[in-house]
Length: 250
Image (cartoon, rainbow, N blue to C red; front, side):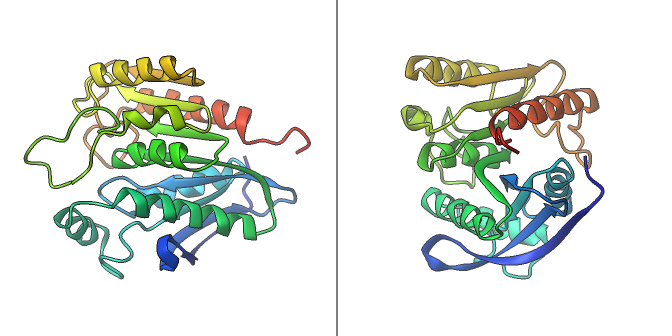
């Protein structure tokens, strides 16, 4: 842990050369650090996600949170931006990958990167973390209860996405999955289906499911928050990133 960090809003070049907003947090200690691209949940680029980004910096990682709704709702509140994004069907998969790639380029440009990068995402961001890891060369990825990696959205869902379990063969790195046993999207059956796909593809993965926890159990500001599950989940994340993002000569 470090008490010396800086957090600020920056501009990065995302998919298609678009200029988008992002929130950057970085330790101010000397050295080179692994990079984490934090992918926000469907409710958007909010204070809770910024706090998570700072938490990674406090633990010795370069961390960046791209505002995936920058184009649809520049300057809007997180709630308004999320509503606009939902009405438009969500973030297109290709654009997400381009924005994550742009976030990694930005971290690389800081000069304190050790060249190792990971994604982590929550809710819709969990699916997008998996998507990025199947589309880009990464060292690690974390899926926190990502819906619709497996399974089709219900007919009344405003988000126009498809399951992406067929991309498992392209996964570029080890995957950590953290799930609530009481969740519906993804359900325990969805988690088992994804695990079987990972086994068939010979991928390195680590899955943990928490009894009594549903969707959003990491979010203290939400009714589904489960402190014990979140505490253990964070310990899993620190151990996982410690294995894959910390250079041997760091």
